[in-house]
Amino acid sequence: MALGRTKQTTVQRKRTIEGYMFISPWLIGFVIFTLGPIVVSLLMSFTDWDVITSPAWIGVSNYTKLISDELFVKALSNTLYYTVLSVPLGMLGALLLALLLNQKVKGTYIFRTIYYLPSVTSGVAVALLWRWIFNPEFGIANNILTKLHVPAVGWLSDPKWAMPALIIMSLWSVGGGMLIYLAGLQGIPRELYEAAEIDGASSMRKFWSVTIPLLTPTIFFNMVMSVIGSFQVFTQAYVMTGGGPGNSTLFYVLYLYRNAFEWFKMGYASALAWVLFIIILIPTLLQFKFANRWVHYQ
Image 1 (cartoon, rainbow, N blue to C red):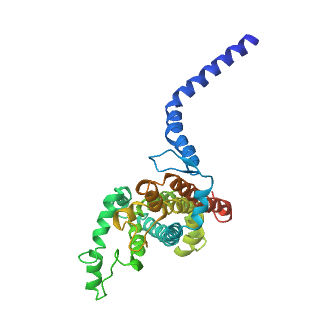
Image 2 (image 1 turned 30 degrees about the horizontal axis):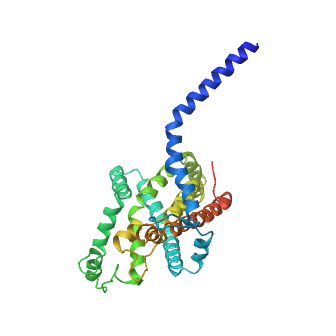
Image 3 (image 1 turned 90 degrees about the horizontal axis):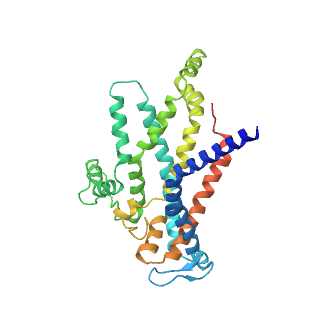
């Protein structure tokens, strides 16, 4: 009996070693390229480092400096403004598209592909396209407004319109959320709709009493991912406006990038990164905390 137990333990140990050997490439990559940089950035956030000279330990000075940094406040307020408007509009647009493309009509698969393609297009290419669309002189947007007898708008050159222009542009990539909503809609059992029809429910009643409750897990997922993504907007502002005009589109990550790679304030940029982590973590935890009040699982 003891010999058999020893043999079994040896086999288990061998399989454990084999398992670790199989996952070792991922573990090594994770430690070197993910966990290592995270730990280093945390240490760097307590230093003053310009890349050229050696880092100098300054404690929490980088974090206390944020309080009096006007550009930090501006970047954070711009990002919050963008999040509050772009996330609900994007989620609503994606849901409406999913509802339309969930109908069993001819050509649905083609339209699904067409609406999804922009979400996998290169961010820089999309930004260049929309910079041309919003060009105040020969852009398509102002051309349409002129034909409608509406005064032209200085989209990316006017501080009042630059942020709305980027929010409108964000709706271009609702195809990703649409695809997730579509998967959620197709996962709703048809029997529930049939039962609702037997009870005399109208189309609107079926939508509010069947579709929405069973779609809440998908809505929750899209909301969490959209909020996280909105706080990390960078490419659009970097390519289209450079943060202008008048810092009206200076997003948080763009300000972090400037500190790190333009002004070489690596310590301060690391502090900005960790503050951003906390800023994203708080609404994410709040969403999970209150999810059980409105998210319904089958």
